[in-house]
Length: 488
Image (cartoon, rainbow, N blue to C red):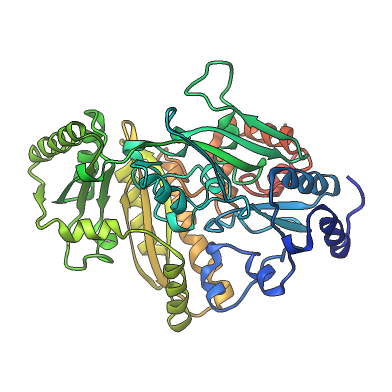
């Protein structure tokens, strides 16, 4: 690594690697690019306190990505990889200066649809919503529909180890990913070929799944696609007496081998934001696929639920069906939330975790109890389970508070960070995982040692091996102070 360069020298060199039109130096754009949605309350008040990038660079192809990363690695410039720009865990903030943002949104093409092998190859910056529309028109689907679908791009899906709302049927991105192309920190371009399965050593796809821009820049992704059967949907909905009883029903559905595309349990606080009149937890299911499979799945779930004395069917189903079909978060929703926070000091956030069946209800109860006791000006905390497995499920905590007695830029320290700390502490105490699908960015990274336990040194060696200069999103996943520690 050579002597650190100033901003002008960095910009000058970038202009030699790509055209000036591919480099954004606008002061307002750099300011907004310095933070992600974790700091959304101060952002709503036009307050930006994180370090600004030197530039935002938009490569047009993989070769340009390689040139940029090679240069940054040689000069010790921190690189923040970005595509959909929807991070909510401080993953897009810089922990070390100087830094640049390499934005993949110009890499936005469908490369190939391989119908015979049921695969779609897309560049990293292709919006998922465009790919899904393209596939639906051909009676196909990715099966991967996160609530943030209108904001999500393919590279980010892999980098954050994304999950879709229909994951219990189709799987998470780790189940859908077939192969990929990526650029390593030193500019080396690698490709993992597309195969249905392989047994030739460790599966290298998993180096990039959940890497959060801290190991490489993903440039191209191949995922599985499936037949699209919207005409075969069956919806079911029930009130359930308690969250514990609801978790038990979710478990029975999964243990008995059923794979509904939607399998959700809401507590009354969370559900009240959609249907305020409902005062009990609610279970929601949807089956899909070929008609015989969908019919059998719906019938099997009904038989399980009917054995419980703690559930009551909900009718009519049309309001719930309409609600789910519109359950996405796009730029309009983001803008509306910003406008609301500018007028009123009310803030809502989410934090998701995963846990085994044996402790998931304990985590939910412990977190909601502590938050109510310890967080001031709390408007409420609830949550839901939306992704289940044979051995456990997730909790998506939803909470809101009123910012009082502090300036907007102090909101994190007073409210958001302490609340997240409670969720993480109780999750770790009850053998859960501190993130199910949002990643940990820099917000939850301080707990990485407790999360990984005795396997943490292996994680650190992996990072040091593939990015020894720590120029790929330094501080993401492993905080700088941990990376600089001498291992004993």
